[in-house]
Length: 398
Ligand SMILES: C[S@@+](CC[C@H](N)C(=O)[O-])C[C@H]1O[C@@H](n2cnc3c(N)ncnc32)[C@H](O)[C@@H]1O
Image (cartoon, rainbow, N blue to C red; front, top):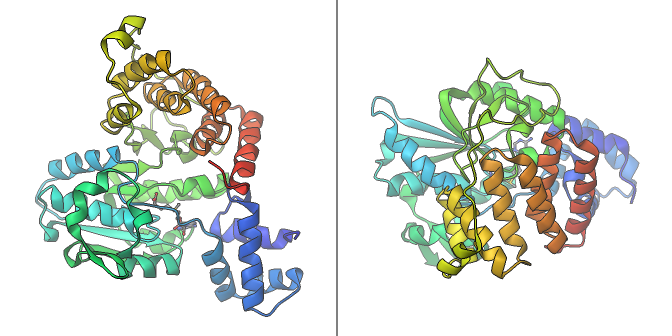
């Protein structure tokens, strides 16, 4: 099926969708599903319906957005959130925005994290926003299946769930902390009316948007984040996707960003080239003896160090393990993240290339590599990696 340009243009303009970021077959399946629902068998006519009927446009959005999420995704962010919340004064309630919230796992993780840190429910609130009404309805229902509990961190929060015949039900005390709102990140007037926040989660949205939409989103979020506030980004969304409006706080694995320094940021309107920090941290030399004296390192211990934001330990452990297990692609991936966190993007690119050489279908590594190449201005190489990523996704392998 050939998707009409007018239909792609509509998704591009109104949703900000970069069609190369999603699986072509899923896009075609979604369109076919809506054509059936509209009893329309001519795709050109369906494109006209979508252009002229706002309701049908919203129905189409429901079937194409990627709502993939889970509880306590990128766990180091929640450890940092806990510290930020404890530093927040008692003069005013702590307001947190989760945009996009998808089916609720992320905003509920924020609420559970703060309750468990000892904050009283009346001292904070979480606003959760998404363009998808269906995702929001599922979030409000508060019922989750096993798939949402993939990470290890959620295991310490299971007392906030009760097991029912339909699935895991989130506790009312957590639900009461979260308010859900339907909005599009490209419709800034509705969002700006929500006010400013000291903490914003905007994770795993920018990877689906085209460059102009990312720019609009970055401008909106820069106005919604209070001075000195923290924006949590996704693990594949480095400062380049934020068009220079935000800069990394360099707290490893948290993907925490601040407003860019106005003196150094140019708020570029194109992909921002990677800026090498003035004094990159030095990497401790690793010798064979490290492996010999540290036989207990494992991939799990590397992941744990990564989640604690200890990049030096990640590098030490990965280098030691690679001497014994030189074909473990995940070790190259963690090594790349740690090098990137310490300001060595070129080294990070090399490690990611090694990861995908060993495991050609490694989606996280491909995604991250594309963004790093973008940031280094290697746009053609980035595009080649993206094409490969799309092919991998279409064939459903990881
Ligand atoms: C992959 S989920 C990310 C959920 C969560 N933040 C996380 O990281 O686990 C992406 C979400 O972005 C939402 N989305 C896509 N385009 C949007 C837009 N233009 N405005 C607001 N939400 C959007 C989708 O509906 C989907 O729920």
